[in-house]
Image 1 (cartoon, rainbow, N blue to C red):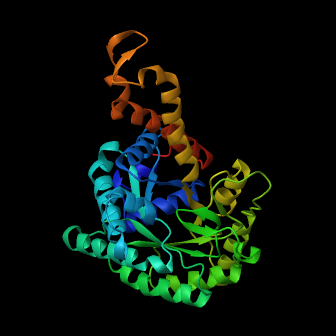
Image 2: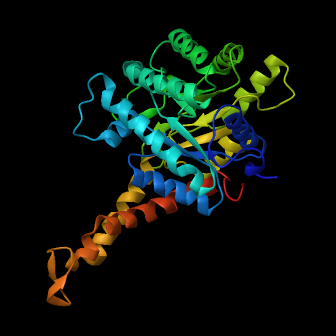
Image 3: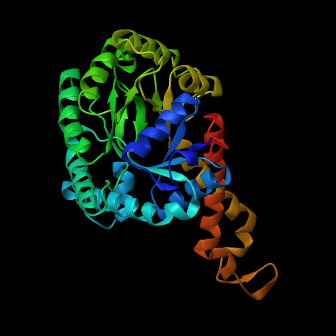
Length: 359
């Protein structure tokens, strides 16, 4: 039995999303969440997942969503970010089924100052639910890890009650992911904040479970956004297994991994660290952003290096002064090169997470 025996191809939400994550946890693989900023990057991720027979998560950060809408739009009151996220989600819904794979549409880190963005997306979810019986997005992330634990949980619970009514999944973060990404800089946070305590995980799990089962926790175990030199990041993914054991004992569960965990700051992590987080820790999702950005750029860079003599003028190249160069500067050509190198990196992420040939 594979994933497509339990959930359909196309965008999955609600019970189907739970089934997907539960299947991944049981079979010890995780699904990469690829930060996308355009239809091109979305297509690269979907193509990669299709070709290796894997489910995939397409996610939009706040800045990425604003970029989807267009840098020429004002983002006052998060208007561009809302428009871009909704437009991105609608695009994914339009093409996902054609790729023949289960697809999760997710919004990435939403800090307290960005809550108007969250509200706008949730309003779009509720409107879509009225018409189609499911939310526009599969899931959203609230990142209130910079606030007190009490405020973090209180705000998440408020939103979770609202989201449960439309079968929308909530991912929350407890403990801080270090480093810098998408305008959020946590490079100087206290080291203790980078490691979540098991008692916190249990408190979240017990309170959230009273409302719905559709939630996951991004617990900090030294995670850092971005790519840093070896030795600068002290990851301890083995902590996830200890958190699972603690929660299972507290609730008397026969399931040794009752929590759905999320691995943030995955770029540059070793394969052993990823394996520990997934197999022992029960992580079902890992964010991938920095590495796919680099892969996309690599395709553009290599295309230019290979064809630079054809990219200096519209007409005239080594084959003759009158020879046209349109087939080299056509965006569909050089952007396709970027898509292919990004596609390779997405496939690598799936392989690292055991998410290959699982359909």
